[in-house]
Length: 499
Image 1: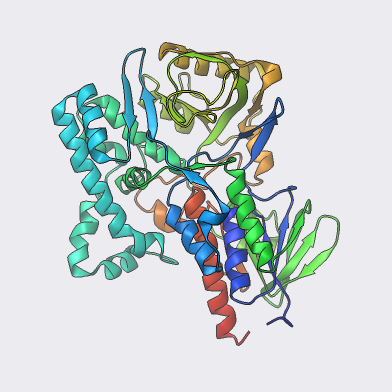
Image 2 (image 1 turned 180 degrees about the vertical axis):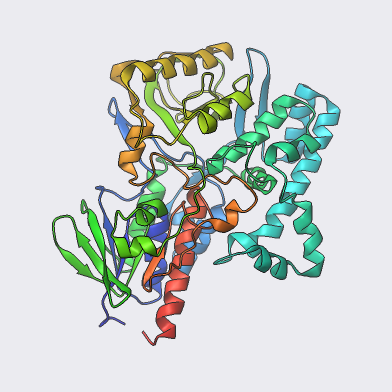
């Protein structure tokens, strides 16, 4: 295999890194081409006031995905990335008094929910926990780890006994409808409906099966020492040790196609890299829109569904007062229906948003030091970054509304221009071409959405996809799995042709 042309991976996000690592372990030469100066993709950090703040994903789950990836490469994940397990999964607030902490231990959460909403609601949460665990276990092998699942393959893999379990997951109900079976307190329905946003979707339109995210979080939300960027760097370092070549600061202009097969890439500077195959770790929409060439575009079909959520974020150094922050904090709007109508129906930033605050200097109850804290403040927004210009006035209004929600819930926070950096859907659209700022690919709206997501293998021989916009879906662990699925299918195809 050393005499063959290398496999070219476009993009050093976690999907591309996972694919490159598995391919190198299998004995292939691999070249990763990344237009930024460091690995990570959506995992990125910004320097604000001389301190690095995670500006992308902040929640680390499904640790086993990375342990398996490292083990396959003959390494130990724990030696490369240090993790800590905080006591509180997330802290939630609805007003100046209503608070709720969720925990990994079900019974601790039952107690907290019982205190907020009454013992009956605590018992319903216990049932919800049991059911979401079963949903995850039903779908892990038959859907999440499957290369190209369909409703038929899902049913066949489940077997006769598993059909009832699949039906129990309420595949045709929306998440919001299904949550009404469990929770009578609208605040809890809102809290667990928020898991739809982990897939960039609305709880009023996504399938109930996405409630399995609750089980994933309950299984552990770890803190990465040094920030999430350390995870991406650890993957890149291991891939380098296994022989993967990295080219940073290089932009791919097009995918080369010869005799109906992807055979490399051409850079914007004109240099061409020949390849045995190409793995694209970018949003599938960038390929389907022809940003990497017309022949690749014809090989990637996207259903005409809605784009997923974008966001407005502020990375800031700020003093906080009042509300006792944990690492992950959620401050809810008073009208969830209106919030998602604003985003998906009216294509505008919500009039009153739900606000997520990641306090990155906190492991537990208090900050790790005195002085300004490192914060990521986020509100969801429509993915219109390529068709609508968010001006300074609108961003000031958006910031004012977000800070108003925080004040209503008891948190005093001042975002000063010299100590904060805002990222809008326009910025995300530039960072991730072809997306309009969508951060999760297509929205998972309707029961078919999970089956219409692109898979790793495309209609063009030698062209494969990885990343959060393809199966099994968005999020750091899922994108990592997508890279492993892409590598596995590529290896299977090349070996079937005698390569």
